[in-house]
Image 1 (spheres, one colour):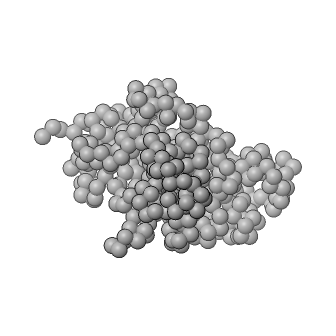
Image 2 (image 1 turned 180 degrees about the horizontal axis):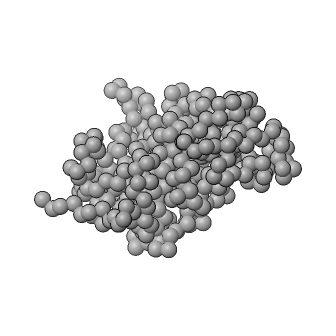
Image 3 (image 1 turned 135 degrees about the vertical axis):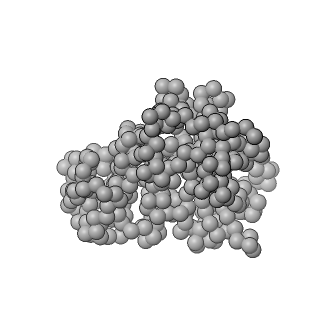
Length: 371
C-alpha cells in the first residue's frame, strides 16, 4: 500500500496553496487538517471544479470511521475553469500565486454556522490528497435542490403557470450553464418559492441558511446546485444542507443586497446576539481584509431584526459573547448616527448606512448593542 504523503507543515504552520496558516489556530477553531486519497468515483462537477469521493487516512480514525466524505480540490490558475474564480477576483481577491483560498473560506463559513447553532451547513475541513489541498466535506445523502425541482415536477408546473412553452421548458432543462441565464434564474427562484410554500419546516431551514449566507457574504447561494435536499423513508423532503460554500467572506459588500437579509422567520429561531464577534480572531488572522465588511453585514442583520421585531433590548441586556475576550459593549441609541442618518431613513439601505456611520465602527475590544 502506498503511504499517504505528509501534510506540508513547518514550525507549526500548514502550507495551504501559497499561504501558511497556524495549525494551532485552526485546531482552536475546530478546523481539522486531514490527509487521504481521492477515489476514482466523482460526485459532481461545476464551475469551481470536480468533487470526488475521498478515503481518509486511517491515522485520522475519528474521521475515517465516521461516514463518507467528499473532496473538492482547490481551484488554481492552471485549471481550465480558473476563469470562474478570476471573474470574482474583485470580491474574493486572488493571492499572488492565483489562489482564491476557497478551502479556507468554506471551512470558516461552516464554523460560523456551527457557532451560531445552525445545523444546515455541510461539515467542512481541509483535506490533502497527495500535494493537492481542497475542501473536505461530509457527504450529504439526497440530491441537489436543482435536481429535485426538476424531478419533482415543480419546475415544469411553475413554467406552465407562467405560460412558458413546453419547447422552451425542454430547452431550459438541457442548458449547460443555466445559472448564466437571467430568465432561468428568475424562473428557478419562483419554482423554489413554490416548493418552500408547500414545505413549512424546509422553509424555516432555508431562512437559517439565508442568515449564515448573508452573514458570510456567500456569493452564489442563488445557485440551487449548492443546496442538498434530504428525504425521509417515504421520500418526503425533510432537510436542507448548504454545500460548496466557496465564495464566503468577500472584501466588499458591493454585491450584497439588503433584500437578502433574512426575515423575522429566522429571527424567531436564532437568539439576538452579537454576530460581529463570531470567529473574530480566526477571520482577523486568516482574512483580515474581510473582517470590516463582515462586521457591516452582521450589524445590518441585527439592525434589521431590531427594526422588525423590537427585540433590540434583549441584545443590550444579554450582551452575549462568543469567546473569552473582554468585550466592551458600545451602546448605540436608536436613531443616533454620527454621520447624520436617522433610524427611519432606510432609503440608502442598511449596509450603506452602517458603512458610513461612525457609531457602528469596531475595534478589537468593542462591539455593537442596541437599546
